[in-house]
Length: 183
Image (tube, rainbow, N blue to C red):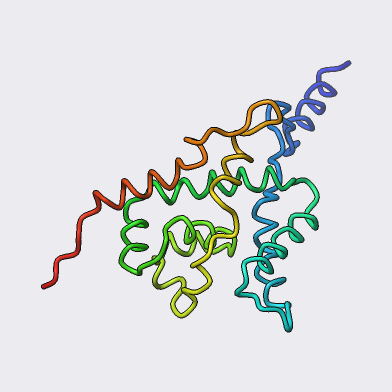
């Protein structure tokens, strides 16, 4: 190969903008977010059904999980519990729940399922759900169900401590939160 051919080949290779890096892996799709994004629209389309009933709302989330390939109910509940932990460990969130008279466990669960937790983080719970506080009142899944999905297996079910871990944390945190003084 002559020198100018080597230079031409080198310039062609160096001008190539797409460089494949085998160490980079493709990001896994957010199946959890996809399930939650379907929930609100399916809930709104339930004509004639009492969407305030826990059983109806739970059936809708089960249907959403079935419609999204790539996630099982156990994976969904595990991710839901992990995401809820981020909020129940956050004292300003707990204070806002207390001030609004809402159960933090149910609120965390519902705002995540309704796909509004990013908005809550930005503008606060009261502003994100103004007039829709009823949507936050009843948890769709029990703490035991979430713990069983996260920690349980066929051989080793979740322990009683794991099944009450979040409630204990919330209760203890609520006891140490500063009280709002009347001015």
